[in-house]
Image: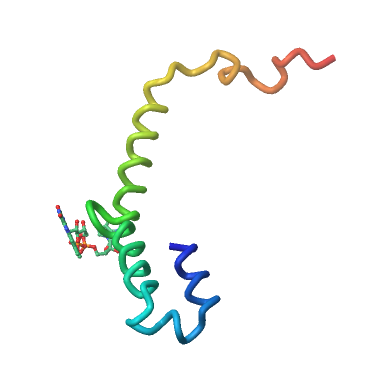
Length: 73
Ligand SMILES: Cc1cc2nc3c(=O)[nH]c(=O)nc-3n(C[C@H](O)[C@H](O)[C@H](O)COP(=O)(O)OP(=O)(O)OC[C@H]3O[C@@H](n4cnc5c(N)ncnc54)[C@H](O)[C@@H]3O)c2cc1C
């Protein structure tokens, strides 16, 4: 998306015209953020999966120590 937006900015008004192929590339790039699940919904799914995976990892015993048990001299 950023590449096509930058290209369009570079070409100015000509890039915006339907006669320029960028017009189609811009819509195609946007489709990647919408089609087969929007990027927001994908982020939700990834976040949910990470939280589930992290919850299943055994907690390291050092995380249960009080600060004064770290052995500081
Ligand atoms: C040209 C085109 C071709 C397509 N081809 C196919 C195809 O071949 N096969 C197919 O299965 N589908 C296809 N689709 C449908 C496409 O997958 C859906 O449009 C897409 O999944 C988004 O769903 P929606 O349009 O119902 O948007 P909505 O679900 O109404 O979303 C609208 C907005 O709300 C946000 N939103 C919705 N729910 C949440 C949430 N829980 N958390 C955060 N944000 C949220 C979305 O991110 C989006 O910004 C096509 C769509 C288009 C436009």
